[in-house]
Image (cartoon, rainbow, N blue to C red; front, side, top):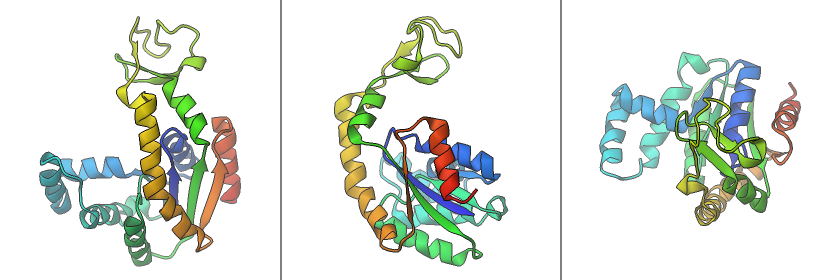
Length: 214
């Protein structure tokens, strides 16, 4: 089973990807992780990407597609995978189509976790991060905002710059302008599955798995 998961910042896409991967016994392929691994392992494409990243530029689509192809062709993914963070644009979606066609035939699912923009803004502006252990919490889930419940750090919480409302709204604009055409592209092919991400985490996971027939 091959799954591609989409979602705007703050919808809980990464959390759901991990839950689904664990439930199905398939790897969670994060494009950020495989890019860093390719650079760390000094693969041919990783070395090319490293030069570009160190120059402060974005990795071109053809190189990123090659890194994605290498990861999905690995024996670790022979029984399926859940791909998170790719494709982000229509051009990348078409590159992914080519990659999928070159893999052994299998069932493919394209899932979008949906949450209203205002709910996303509310979620993210109410986040606090622990500077000691790096854990992220919503203020409403904390009994005491002076002590981290994970590492017991005292007065260790801070608000990240990317959790500022203006930054969040700009990230949402970018998501809608670049990724919505991708959802429309797969939607026209009747491949998209939409799931309400405003529900509790366990309920969202239950709904995703139900739509996958698991």
